[in-house]
Image 1 (spheres, rainbow, N blue to C red):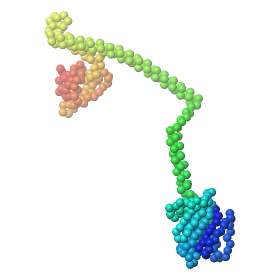
Image 2: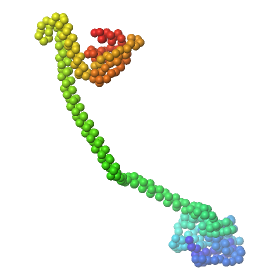
Image 3: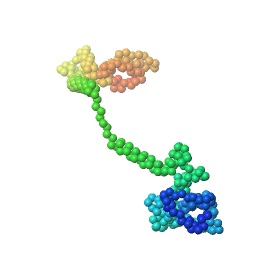
Image 4: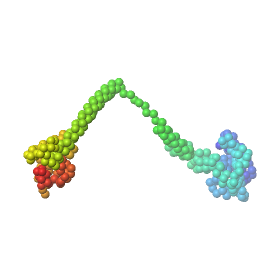
Length: 342
């Protein structure tokens, strides 16, 4: 902002129209009351902001009701001619072109945007020791706060743009992240390689064991099929002995002793087949204990899993084969005893 000239008329003690011109540095000299403050300060504040530290009605020269100030100012490479008349009129020319404002309020908003408000002007464009206005005498902290507060919006805008840029950069880095591989030392690599070979050797050993077990399992399946076939044959022969009084092989009549012996042999064969086949629910009673309410506990041996197990009274053993005979009752003393005696 560079003040070039001031035209003044009817303003305080300047009754007639007078134009003052300014150089880069201008000194105003005069007696007290001659109008130095009026020319240098009051006229500019009134022209730019319609401001006076007292009532505006005191501005016109005594005996008059109107006045005006016209300032010519160079700002941002534009020449502005601003004329304000008391009481209300405000006109602005930019580079000799009149600016089309709807009213004085719109024109004032333009000036505030151009030169900031009156408080900004008083604080940063003038020194008035009488009014306590001298930013240069402020302390370091106060001066820093004052200077930053002027452009708070500017700094806030910079901060917002930096945060937006940082957020976008973080998103980009996350999406485009490159993971760099860090290779171990030679000693570490050698140890890892040795351990890997050891683990692979164990895996090959397990694979060999699995292959041998699968082969044994196939053999057991074949053996189990053969035993199952023999069991069915023995069961068929036992049923023939029970149904007929003659031998199932030769057709000759059997005496009682021979038939009972043949039935006993067939029962033993069937039990052996059940045991060797590993029937999943075939057990052998190891011991039994008396409980209340005629219930018992059985310690049994499972042939297939080759493990001992305890069965408590009240358990229903439906479809369980105990010593070659099927049991379908609850475990009670009477039922177990009756079952074992049959």
